[in-house]
Length: 473
Ligand code: NAD
Image 1 (cartoon, rainbow, N blue to C red):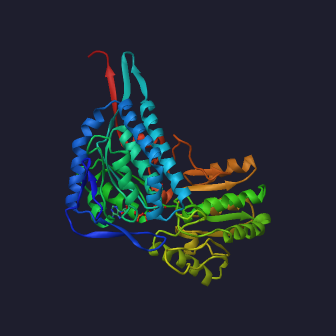
Image 2: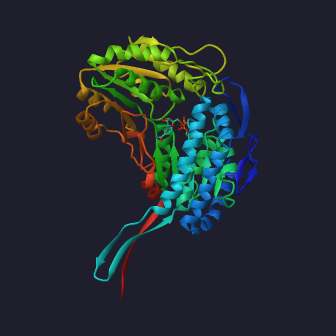
Image 3: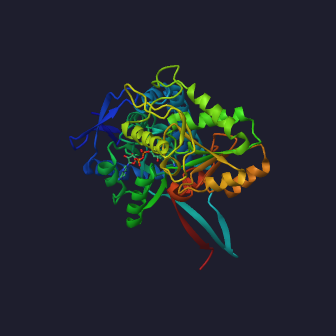
């Protein structure tokens, strides 16, 4: 059974109960991890608590040096981490390598950002100065999902470490391998206890961790359901929490675009990670004139995708993470079909081992169906005809989520209208990319609470005092 990583060493669980980790491409058991007990949580938090003061006392450039070393280790061992990602998550190797590279970049960028982040200062009157004095919060609990175990893991580890917090990270019980390995191998040179991995599931390890009295800040990335629970628990305890949740992103295509390019972008955005990205487009709004050709070309492009295990070179798209996820995707499509929607390709789970579901394009799905309202988190593209750009924006905003949105247009006024009106934290115009290093965003509605990136995230993870200083009594 895999061990926790606590206080700079491998630590077996205090309990005997285990959870099986599966290879999504075959359904085979590849590892077992502890469920994580209250005693394990206590031990991990105590290690972080002990390590926190010394880590906080380092100068920002000293912490930067340690993080740049971690970024170097991520780059040096990219193959090892990527192969673990393929094994436990199922994504194609090239996506896994890109994820590790992104994680190395994120680590380096937070290392720099924390050194250069300045506090504000203003004059309080003659001979009086008022300024912000920023300190680490102490112990951070990071709880992360299974879709980008390394990238999302590092997006939460690196900023916490950069501002001087000690961390306990709990990876998803579905994908613990790469995170466990990465903390030991890439962050293992940090002082013992500064960065700990606690293995286990939500109800045992996770719940104890978020309500632990010695945890100062909880950073959560995951589903709306768990996020609401965590926000409630932390709210009750008055503990700081940042929660980044799911989405139901819109992809808008207007009639000014080159259709082939819009379809190529839609295909990459929709099918990367088999559609299991919080910012995958989940509703396509296409204006009248280009609607039919868009559906036709996206269907052809979807049919041409080769499904297979992530380790195979010819694979365009891997499996879904597990049977639960596949059942959800299957149900969204089946419900739409029985309500009269047209399924242009895909639509049924693939027979055989593993949790494969094919690229699927559907039209005529009613707005109140789960495939239009709830996060599907799979390779399903519901395409909706809209009369014009205004209607596209209106329909895009008709959602309880507000994580991000994509807009394909050659019209600058329409692009401006979109960024002004869309109720989403990240607006991607003619691109699949939502943020450059240092950028920040705050989700709308049920997609989260607080800033998840950039210098604003560093501020969320640290405590600011206002100091008003007069030169004499
Ligand atoms: P999830 O909420 O089921 O689990 C996420 C993590 O929370 C896991 O580590 C899990 O063990 C833990 N957890 C579950 N119950 C808990 C509890 N009661 N207390 C404490 N921890 C608990 O989400 P998931 O299925 O792993 O991930 C998919 C979701 O994550 C999707 O909704 C996706 O949109 C979202 N996501 C959001 C972002 C973002 O940046 N907004 C990024 C990636 C994924």
